[in-house]
Structures are given as C-alpha cells and as structure tokens.
Amino acid sequence: MDSNRRRNSPAPPAMANASRIPPAYAIALWRWEAMKFNPARLLAFYLGLALVFLRFSMLHELLSWLAGFRLYLLNAIGAPAILGVLLTGGVRRTYGLRPAWYWTAFFLWMIAATPLSVWKTGSAGLAFVYLKSEFPMLFVIGGLAVTWRECRRLMHVLAASAVFYLVVAWLFARETDARLSMLFGTTANPNDLAAHQLLVLPFLFFFALDTEKPRIIRLIAAAGTCFGLYLIVATGSRGAIVALSAVCGLVLLRGSSKLRLAVLALIIIGIAVLPHVVPQERYRRLLVFTPAPDAPEEAVAGMRNRQELLASSLKITLQHPVFGAGPGQFMVQEDILKRAEGAYRGAWHETHNAYTQVSSECGIPALIFFAGGIISGFRLVSKIHWQAKQNPAHQQIAAAAFCAMLSFMGFGVAMFFLSMAYRFCFPALVGLSIAIHNTATRELAASQASTSHSAGGSDHGKLSTASASASLPRSLR
Figure 1 (cartoon, rainbow, N blue to C red):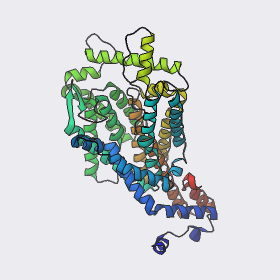
Figure 2 (cartoon, rainbow, N blue to C red; figure 1 turned 30 degrees about the horizontal axis):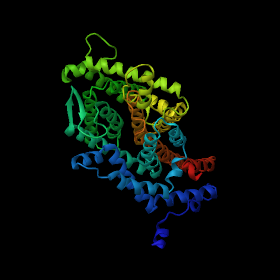
Figure 3 (cartoon, helix red, strand yellow; figure 1 turned 90 degrees about the vertical axis):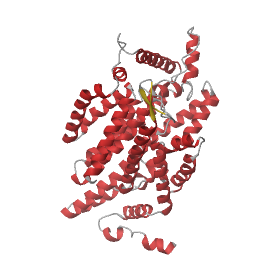
Figure 4 (tube, rainbow, N blue to C red; figure 1 turned 60 degrees about the vertical axis):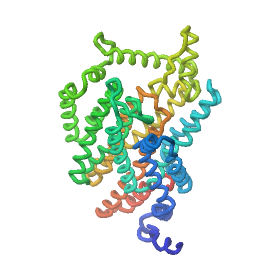
C-alpha cells in the first residue's frame, strides 16, 4: 500500500521548475500536493461536509422531532470530523489567517468570564456546549478544504442545505398569530426562522450566479431564492426586513450591472405585489418602526419591550465592562437590576441583540473580538471577490465570495435584533471565509503563474517564485 501511495504521489515541483522555484518552495509545494491526496484528510473532509449539511439544513433537528427523541447525529458525525481536523493539520491551516485568532480570543474571553459569572454553573455549561458543538465549526469548514474544487463542493453542500431547509419550511411551518413559524427546533421562533433563511439563501443564490451551471439549474435556483425571500417576509420579522435592505444595498454597491437591475426590478415588484399577497395584519406589522396610533398593538409592545431590553443590556455592559455578567446570564442579571430599581421582577428575556448579548454577558473585550472576527472574515471574502471578478476565467470564485459576503451581511445585520451569539452560525461563516480565501488565493496564483509562463519575458523567474509563494497556505510558507 505504501509503495502504491508513493507511486501515485505527485513529483516535487522542483524537478520541473528547478531553475525558477527555490528548493524550499519546491519542497513545500510537494508537501501541499501530497496533503491533497491524504486519505485521512479526504475522509475527514467528507465527514465535515456531512456535518455542514446537518447543521445548516437542520436535518438533525427534524429527525429528532419526528422520532420523538434525540438521535445524537451531530455527535456521531461531528466527533470523527473534528478528530480528522486535529490529525490532518486543519487547525494549523485555519490559524493562518486573522479571523480565526479573533474568534479564538472571543472564546477564551468567554472562558475567562465564566468564573466571575452571577451563575457559574449555567455559564460553565454554556461554555462547554460552545466548545463541543459550536466553536469546532470554525475548523471543520476553515481547515479541511485545501483546493478550490473542494471549496466548490462545500458551496454546493451549503446550497443543498438551503434547498432542504426551504422544503422543510414549506412542509412544517405554520401560521401563528399571523406570523410564519416552524413547528420544531432552534428556529421555531419566526425571527429565528427568518435569520436562518438569511444565512443559507445566499448559497442557493450561488447556483443562480454560477455561469458554469446549466441555465435551467440557474433559473430554478433563482426561483428558490425568491421563494425563500417570500418566506422571510411571511415571518413578519422587522429585523429581517432591515437585514434584507442591507443585503440589497450590498448588491447595488458590489454587484454586476445585470444583478443590480434585477434587484431593482425585484424591489419594485415586491413593493407593488406584497400588499396584495401578504395578509394585511402581517404587512402592517412589517411597517411598524415607530409607535404609530394605528399600528398593531402586539408589534408596538414588542418594539417597546426590545427597547427596554437594549437599555438594560447597555446598563449591564457599563456595570460589568470587562467580563460581563457571565456567559448566558443576561436574564439573571437583568432581574437583579430591575429588582434593585424597585420593580417586582425582571423581564426574563434575552437581549434580542447578539452584540449587546456578548458585551453584557462577556464584557466589552469579548465584543471587540466578536466583531473583529466578523469584520475580518467579511473583508477576506470581499478581497477575493474584488480580485476574482477582474478575470473572466474566475467568475465562479467571484460568485462564491460574493454570496459569502451576502450571508455575512444579512445574518450580521439580523443579529442586531436577535440573541444568537453562541450558535454555530458565525464560527461557520468565519471558517467559510478562511476556506474561500485559502483555496481561491491558490487558484488565482496558479492562474497568474500559467499566464506569466505563456507570456514569457525577463521577469518570468521572479513571477514564478512569487506565484509559488502565494499559492501556498500560510501554514506552509
């Protein structure tokens, strides 16, 4: 078996390019090529894809709900996938870029805040679950894909997850108080359902943008995206409408001319059609951003309640600026705050803002790390999008990076209205930004090397050396 593996392993690039590529780069490139075909890494990669599908599609929650008991699918698939990350260098590859360090600092600050929590046992339990189930998604997504082909498969799995979740929402979402909500799981709340759609829909939209796909596939993907947008509106979530507005703004700012026209047309059609296809009570709710006299009472009460929770979270942040009240303990600390102010009891609700959730529960430094990870991850894919769209041969890379930007934007803005700071979503998005950057950078550098080889010239040797360096992950440079 070892002899066959050595026979199938690619030869060191130094054999062919010894006159142009320094030996150190040639050896590193050879190690990189050998890692591509490492059976253990490939097995871990496909287990990682299965884990990604489970988490983004919510299949594990659906099956547990239908069965009536917990099936532990995440443990069964996640444990060997995480072990594969550890054994095949996935952690080292992930830490080659800044967003991973930001997110690790956020998690370590969460750990540091736990001993000072108002309820240490509750905070310790939350930190343990985050370490076991949520934080590893950063490395599963960011560290296992090493080629653009594998990253493209990851995008396809995310798109399949979006399709599956659309079908599940169509089958198992019901009208509750004039709002669409799921019958089960962590997205049962209408606002959470809308946020998850904002997270996954851009990856279905990737199929619509990918010019290498057949036209019929692109049209189906576009239709599915439109259906997902309707489901977001049907939840009656005002925060989701704000997030959709931010996504549209990003498309108008960074999208192609055709895409901008399509979005403008969709906005005009939506404004004209929605009042006639959405129930009037729900449509009126979506327009409530100030306590107008004719606004639905439930919508106004919800808005005022969130304003009070936001004010409480800011007070707690100022009272506990370094380590917060403890991970997951905003409700306990808010109850203490309200009783101290003379109220009978607190609201016993979460903050409804992921950013003040972090600042009030883990401290301002944790918020800096949290926001730094999101912003730096967005900047990574923004940089790749800008580079790839300059070359017509790399429009698929540009489309993937752009859709990741849309997911960052939509979900990130939605988190100003929801308390989902400790779920897998942000670590997964940050890991995706790392995977896209690492694999796309190598693909773009290889294309540049091929172009410079065809062009020739006196600077050919310098270009080859620079391309060899750029095509390596930072862990191997």
